Length: 161
Length: 161
DNA sequence: CTGTAGGGTTAGGGTTTG
DNA sequence: TCAAACCCTAACCCTACA
Image 1: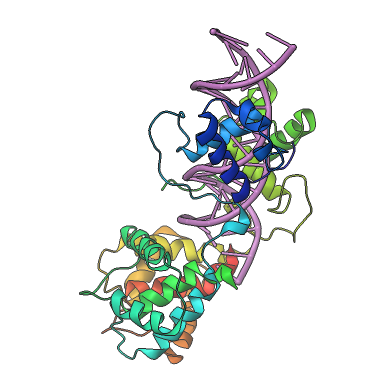
Image 2: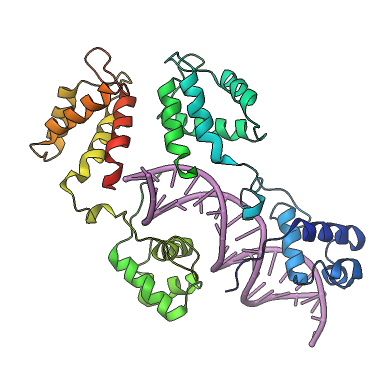
């Protein structure tokens, strides 16, 4: 089978403009329009239909939503995760209290030293929560003890090196 | 989460034969073939695809190779040490007190469930002491907290899998 | 024959486990 | 530490039908 051709943002924009012009469902008309033809040269009308379905949450074109996408083409990754482990190690070295740290204090430290992606705090939190749910780590008061965070890094970020 | 279902060599052979017959990519067809259906009864087409990817070095199905596998299913492990991590995990799951355990209690539990190598306690102790010396873990009272033991396993036994 | 809707399957990315 | 197993969903395929 032929490898996947991930949609480029250029193609996506052309599709959206095409739908605005011709309404969803008239895929062949969009393809024939000289404004979109060259951009969408290696997409079929079926491809357009499928992509539009995905853009609208994977369900039927006129219907409801699903949860947000997690799968992306490789060149669209948002997070340069590669520094996460280094960052957190540095922080753990910096704080002396073995009782650890609350997340806000940590975030402030990191923000002061690094250009953080907006998604970082959210995904970091989610990963911590997942581990906590399984009983591997837990808060003491409002803080995660140093060892927990160390463990967390070890578990989640080794592959970034 | 459900425990992993390691592929048996029988299943693996069936998959290989199926690919030979239907070519890689036609996973559902392989599953439907009466010659393979019963052997692969509790595998999905997705499982087949993933396994084929692993067999071919974790890369793309039709592409190049990566380095050879070192990870094995539990029934193929060579080293008698192989159960250390599993054993200790099991014990850590069993005890509820997050303050952990003293070593004698743990040894008694393990002896009651496993055929221990005579050298186990001695080398286990030595490894713990080494980590303690470096300041990574420490006793609280007479016990090692659960997390320390967990960390210990992670640090010392990862290579047995 | 031409084209679309909608269900089904695969490919390839990421995540979790041992 | 790192590969096997597992999960998610965009991309692709198949069939019905107008």
